[in-house]
Amino acid sequence: MLSEDFEELLEKWVLREKTYKRTVEDQILPYISNKNVVFLYGPRRAGKSVTARRLLEKLSKNSKTRYVNLEDPKLLNLLNTGLMDSFAEGLGAKDTIVFDEVQLVTGWEKWVRKAVDTRQCQIIVTGSSAKLLSGEFATSLGGRGIGFQILPFSFEEFHRITKKSFEEFLKIGGYPEVVLNPNKKEKLLESYFELALIKDVITRYKIRDSAALRNLAFYLLTNSGKQVSLKRIRNTFGLSYDTIRQFLEYLEAAFLVFQTPFFSYSMNKSLAKARKIYAFDLGMQQYASKSFTEDKGRLAEAVVAIELKRRNYEIYYWKNIKEVDFIAKKKTKISPINVCYSKKLPKREQESLIKFCKKIKTKKATILYLGKTTKSTHEKIEITHKNLKKWLLKKPV
Image 1 (spheres, rainbow, N blue to C red):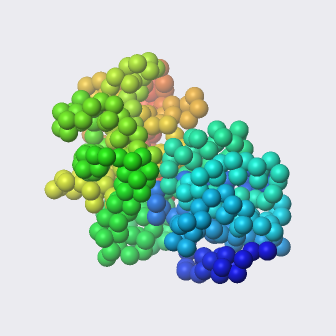
Image 2: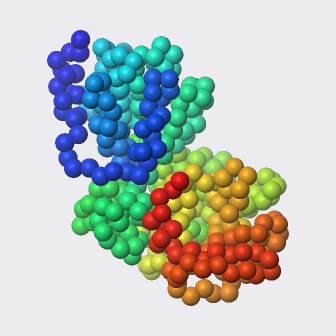
Image 3: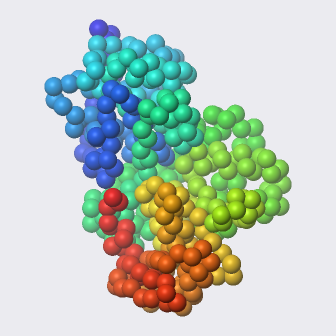
């Protein structure tokens, strides 16, 4: 039986506040099983914990469910696999347990694998490290771990919950607590930034030059949507190439930024070109940015980058005098996309798409803008002009 102290903690962690449905919930539910582990990964405060607890509420009322918050201070000196045994005690094959921020427990992978092998119970785990959960964990479970990325609210979720406009979304971003309390935006985003930097990077990787890391994080967020080369970073901060690559990897694993490489069928050429950097959230981008001007065009482009990431596309950009904002790749399908924050389309938006399509011999491309959805054909290439807001409101398949 669970100890009285643990029973009290489980009661303390029960979800009581009002919550909102996340689009990804319906995708996750069919995969909750004792034959595999569901893992939810994404930025801190993006809604992983709430999503996990909402999933528990949707499961059969005839089964037991438990939510375990491994960040609770009362568990600080107890973080081992024995603790996981204690909380899972008495659960059967159809019961479900959530371990929130599971990476805090050393050896958790082995515990989870054993639980899956013995069909002990249904398991959901969450974590704030992209590298730890999406990569290492999936490998250690031999394909029996199924991951879902939980990012801050999409525009579809933001609009459904608040009824506010796209322009408001550009200002606020998607972190749930910020969306629901926009007057606290600056303080909340500051705390999220510091938490991700300190807990998920500096402490986890034992970074000595934390000032250089912090300055690099601010620099990347300020230049979100722009091409950033290792050489430029080296000249700006005086860091070695190895340190820069390492810091970039850590910041990406902590969900502060992500990179989009140059599109080329040659890996060497792709690696040699500068990469574009995007923030995982518009609010965070603006909190950390040192820019004094609001560039809605760049913010709209960032929205599309994050949404493509949410829809599980591999994302690239292409440039040869003219630029294509995104080459969205899923399996073998390639979709060139330009973003324009205007109701009228400048010629350059079509010209760059035509040039790219002719180069790689593809026949279709898309422009996301503020006007009506139409189609046009140029040099045998079909370009679909889609309304940006409608595209964002459409739930991913």
